[in-house]
Image: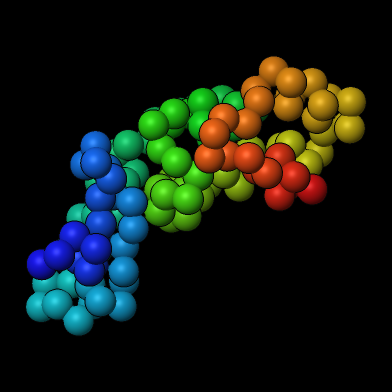
Length: 114
């Protein structure tokens, strides 16, 4: 199967980048493969992390548009940081942005939290 049409697509480093759930569910073992893929994604993230650090510091090799940040533990990492960040005063937000600038691929992340 062509990698561009495979239900589970990976980056060059082997990490899962995209899951086409509807295509995966049309395969005989789709649910088991989906569960295994989600478990694999969770294993790329630490169980304990500093909620005051943006996601790119928690898992630096993972791009912003990766499925990692959209499911399970990754989604919790992003949402927990977003909730914390939104409670901070504007001056502290500016200091956070200065201390942890958005790397390439993450531009607009802070603005998306406003």
